[in-house]
Length: 67
Image (tube, rainbow, N blue to C red; front, side, top):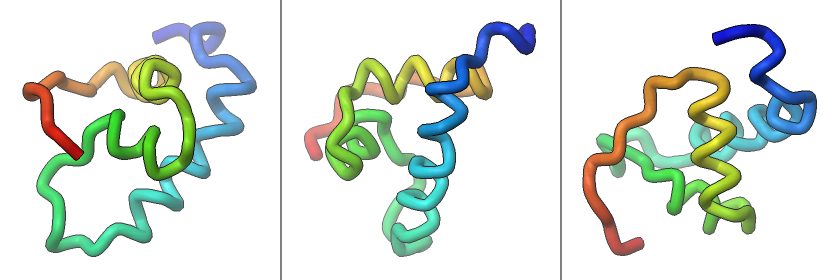
């Protein structure tokens, strides 16, 4: 990942993702989908996926979950 691949806008949203995730009960989720985060923060799920991929590249699609 090059430093130019992460935009300022993405970096501005990351703290919101982290806060949202920290507020989840730890025993409730093994995995949290981008769709779930997007709904919780009233963002587009494609944007959340792109942001998470840009900062880590570690995300995996594990199937569709109904949230």
